[in-house]
Amino acid sequence: ATKAEHEYMLIRRGHEREQRDNDENRVLDFTSDVSNATVEEAMKTLARWRRESHDPIVLRFSSPGGSVISGLGLFDYIQSIRREGIRVTTCTLGFAASMACILLQAGDERVMGENAHILIHEVASGAIGKLSEMEDETKFARRINDRLVGILSARSKMGRTAIKNRAKRKDWWLDSDEAIRLGFCDRLGYA
Image (cartoon, rainbow, N blue to C red; front, side, top):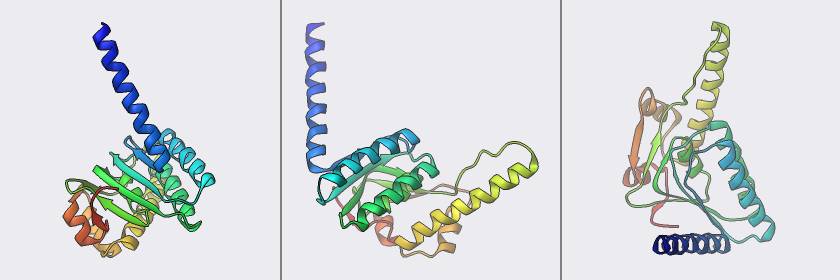
C-alpha cells in the first residue's frame, strides 16, 4: 500500500506541476466533451487570463465535440478575446471532432499535430414530439448547421456548398495533411 500511495502522490504532484505550468504559460487543455460545464470552466480560465495581461493564449483541443450551443458561446468568447488584441492559437492533438473542429477555427493561428484528425458532419438533432414541434426543431437545426458551415467556409479554401456536400449524411474525417490543404488549419506542429 505504501508503494502505491507513493506512486499516486508522484503522479498527482506531476499533474499539479503541469497545471501550474499551463496556467503560467496561458495554455488551456480542452480534453473533454463540449458541454455547459466544460465551456464554463474554460471561459473562467480565459477570463482570468484576459484580466491579467494581453499575452498570447493557447487552446489545445483533443475533444469528441458535443453541444453546439455551448460551443458557439465559447467560440464567440474566443473571438472577443481576439478583438481585444490578445493572440489566440488553437491546436488539436489527437482529434477535434464535430464542435471541437469549429472551436479549432476560432484561433488567429490553427495548428494540428501531424497525426491529428478533425471531423466535420451535419448537426445532429433528437427531435421528438408533435409533428409541428419536430418541424420547428428541424428548421432550427438547419439554421445552426448553416451557421457552422459558414464558420468553416470563412476559415478554409472551400465554399459553403462544397462543405455541405462533403458532410451530408456522413462523417467526414480529415487528417492533418488534408486539413492544411483545404485550409481548415494553418500549419502542422505543436502549440
